[in-house]
Image 1 (cartoon, helix red, strand yellow):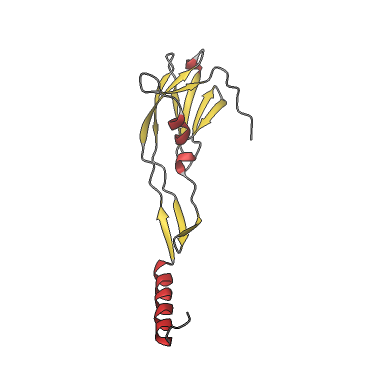
Image 2 (spheres, rainbow, N blue to C red; image 1 turned 135 degrees about the vertical axis):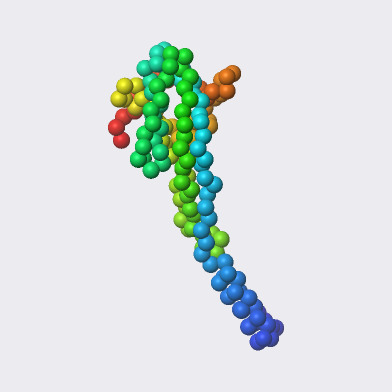
Length: 146
């Protein structure tokens, strides 16, 4: 700041202070995951022995959908709450968990969970000719207790 007058230094300092004061701390809401209906095609030797269980994001309610012999099942995904990031001066200091990554969908055989999926996992599955996401369970082993 060589060669600046005292008045210019005061103006710049005031502008910097105002900029910091105006940007301060903020909260940024993530986009909500809206309720939807999913279509899944379970490929297995006996798909009718499987069920799809969907928990709501608060883990308060579980909906169960039995898979028919053709392996095609439709199930509802409830609305999931929005995450909220905390930013200080525009820099994220705390990030909320992404609700689309929560593994709230379970594929079960009897009382044994063989697969747990999130909305993101479902989106990554291949799509068959009917437009259903395809999940192969032929070689799946039960999940181990964690």
